[in-house]
Length: 413
Ligand code: HEM
Image (cartoon, rainbow, N blue to C red; front, top):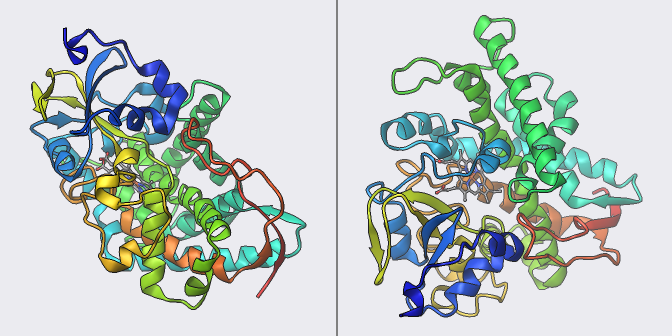
């Protein structure tokens, strides 16, 4: 019997142990970048490469409803979130997120976040040491809350930032981090659902066309407003991933520390280089390991099959480090994106395909815009990096430098 045809052991436990390396380890023996496996008790097929991205994002192949495990919904995305919808209902919900793709959306948010960063830096200089990951989470939360039109944005920022980070940090583990993430989500969904009801009843005013105003009015396919809890879930789907850019800020600091030569070009305010640097941080450092959906029909990819009702996985981390696509993929080289802008189905840290019609992240431009602005500020920040544990464990999802990236001796500009 061909080894690939034998009944497959379920790979859920190795996945939890190996983290980011789980799929790439298995892909290594597959010249066609396809792996048959089992996950969550179902047959699964994992694919990678730009062609595979188009295969994965074809709605005739994959649906998202019922694809995301409950523990991930109860921490990361929220029950009933846009991530779980298909077809017409997905597109109706996605309309709420599409203004995020517009250049003025990016610029407005970036201005709020950089103002919050500049304020924060003045306080860092009064402290003996600062954990950059935590501080970036707070700065991003302050900025996004002000921009989204939330009342008492500044007063609520600290506990909210902690909760938003906990929701992301706890989605892929069964331990205490997971329970912290669930409690954080429960708390914030309830609080924001109350706020949305107050906006609807007129007790609280939301600035016209702000995210808070739009989510309070947004309707589904029948044009009925979302129930307040679902509206809170989608409001959190703007706030939470914006706070999560703190993972990339910590990685950007790590990159500048390891490869200080990039600092000069960023410090000079070279915009094209800042964009290339932001793309390389998103490609090089691990964040989303893979994406998955339920197969609508029997599917075959490069000779390997998965039946209807199985799982199709897109190997995100593996694709972003695929030698065939990147050449020397484990070298951190922003210049690769100066030579040519990224092909949207090759560079997929935030999903592939078209964000308007498919599930690709609608916050990708925002993420790049924030990273460009904050990487320049980081490069200009007068500080020291003390001795600390900067390892980035690949078995932890999501991972980050173990120390959170501590800095000392910050001198305010
Ligand atoms: C830390 C940076 C970010 C990362 C790594 C990231 C990553 C991703 C990934 C991998 C997906 C799934 C794509 C798919 O299912 O095919 C996604 C979807 C999504 N992201 Fe992001 N994202 C980030 C920032 C943002 C920001 C800043 C926002 C909004 C302000 C945002 C909002 C969303 C939403 C609403 C979806 C669901 C889209 C859908 O299902 O149609 N993300 N993101």
